[in-house]
Length: 213
Image 1 (tube, helix red, strand yellow):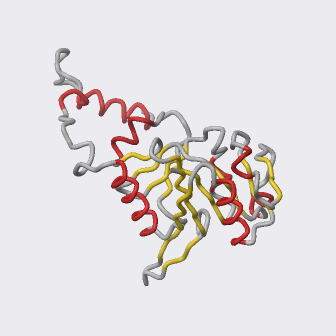
Image 2 (tube, rainbow, N blue to C red; image 1 turned 30 degrees about the vertical axis):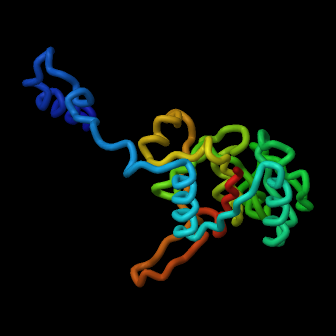
């Protein structure tokens, strides 16, 4: 008997007493938990997002749509970025004032080549206020997952208020689970047994978030 046959046999024995009219687990389980903690105005939700992003050591910028290009250009200049990785669907006006040389997101780019790029600029799918989390889903303005994991500096643009939600359940309602979702809560970091924090271990060392109102 193979391992597969042994496991399937155990499953059949465990289900032997289940009657045909018994309701599925997902129907029996109560789903009456709160979709968010408390009630907030749009302004309060955005403030909570900014607060939690900063708590995760992300750098938060506020700007208007008219000033977005100059804000992104200023961030790139302050970081000393000479090259910037650009997803194929990123609105060109976002980088219209930047002096850094744009590098296209190409399927044939190697991890070594991506590591040589100074910064990457993307949009996002949704931002979660209660957890300070940004979610990318591989849409054209975000590109493939690896372009936000290899470069050391990530600038993420969040449209306020349409891309901001209060809670994880609200975010899940907007997201397609079949897409490549990347959940980002601050710059990449970990700590050893002595609780010494090390940043940039499995993603960007610096995360800058631009809230566009």
